Amino acid sequence: MRWRRFLARKLHFLFLLGTMENLISVLVHCDIRGSEVILGDNCHIHLYENGGISTIGGVHPRTVKNNEDGTMDIDQIEAAIGVEYIISFFIFF
Image 1 (cartoon, one colour):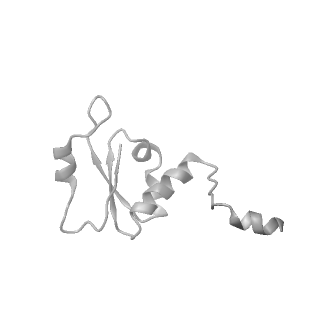
Image 2: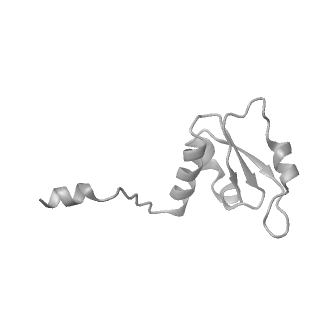
């Protein structure tokens, strides 16, 4: 009976490190090797975890300059999107 209650619960994931969480979040959106992700140049993933998304996920980062308040200019984001060869992308602030 205990196993039935266990299986009836919703599925939850436990990630022990923030690095693991960030990698999974990129891979959920860029699920094909060779995809690109647009990152702010002051983004934590770009500064400290860039190797993981490239090595493990095969995702190529493309940086856009951050404004002083941490946002990115929409015109720069649009310019960074290479429509002719990008398969999927996700924007991280």
